[in-house]
Amino acid sequence: MKRRRFLKAVLAGSTTGLAGCGRPPGRDGQSNTTDASETATTKGSLPNAVGLQTLASGMQTPLDVAFAPDADRRYVAEQTGLIHLHGSNGLRKKPFLDLRDTVEAGGEKGLLGIALHPNFAENRRLFVRYSAPLRSGAPANYSHTFVLSEFVATEDGGQAKRDSERVVLEIPEPQSNHNAGDITFGADGYLYVAVGDGGGGGDQGTGHVSDWYGAVDGGNGQDVTENLLGSILRIDVETRANGKGYGIPDDNPLVGTDGLDEHYAWGFRNPWRFSFDRGEFFVSDVGQSSYEEVNLVQRGGNYGWNVKEGTHCYEADNCPDGTPGSVRGGEPLVSPIIEYPHSGGSVSGISVIGGYVYRGSALRAMEEAYIFGDLQAGGRLFAATRPDGDGQWPTRVVTVAGDSGRKIEQLFSFGRDDAGELYVLGSGADGDGGLHRIVPAG
Image (cartoon, rainbow, N blue to C red):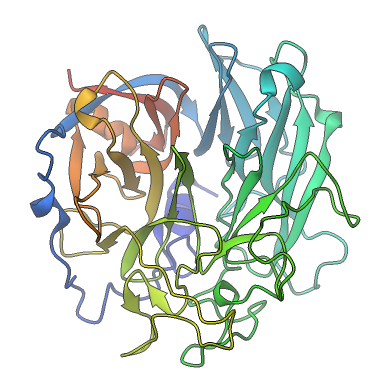
């Protein structure tokens, strides 16, 4: 598949894409929310523009980056199934890990996430999330299999051992899209895994189960008993129990109740990227046709899909703000901290790309701002600042200055190193994918 088609069909929002934009934005094509950039000066110190320092280029759809804790190394995952090693001498020619023989890439499928074990410097363990051809035991009419695997690298951390793969988790995926794919270790040592709702539009169709909400048929986002789709999972990769390749933390919210124990939070459509910052958990969730959102996620939270798209009722004039009392005692549908429309404001787009809180020293003016973006970046990033009280976070555009803006016509992912500096993964109009560090505008 050509990169241009990938951008449209994977992350850009066709009827089979990440954003699932099968209809024009909203009923009238306009947003009824305030232009977020107009309220963006609450702290008055965010820069209007930043620059990019290119570390590596020439890649095809780079989707994730992990930072070695003990060396000047970055591991960059391409959608095609390659993981590259980038060090002080640039991008090494030989892949760190080549999974092209087992990864099913194309559309929204592929090598989607990488996470180094918290003790990677000592044990050289890493985890990857990829799409594979439909495996044994899955329904015959399903699309493919979600695979989470562990690998071990050589003692110097320079090469993954291809034959060391241990499959940790497999999930049958009913449709080709809404695969999410991010994996990250929390400060608690557990692995958090993002799982989309199973694809299609509106969380409906093949592989979407019945739920408590009658206004929309299905689906997986509001169900926690039938499958693991539409959720953030939390698992213990240090133990194995009940025939699975992982254990369940005792304090997961559904342990001992009616629900699958792996669930940590639910009500998601396609949680494309997430990050932790000082005990807070930021999860971006790609919208259906009108709104994109970022959530501040807590244990046992329900984030609304497919009852709501952002703060707005989905496919209904009115909708509840919580589940009925018969569903886990009645739980609130938690509103996002950031929402932006598909049109009608300078902060707008088609598919949210979750980022990180800035904790570096190169751009002091961005300290504590949440930096994120949209697939349809066009040389723009977004910066959100914490409000003085409750409510949504004011958000504004931060332009990538000069020719550097052309490097991220499309934005795929962010990274943050141990020093708190931020990186972006994206591609230019020519389809050239690269890894770039955010720096002051020159």
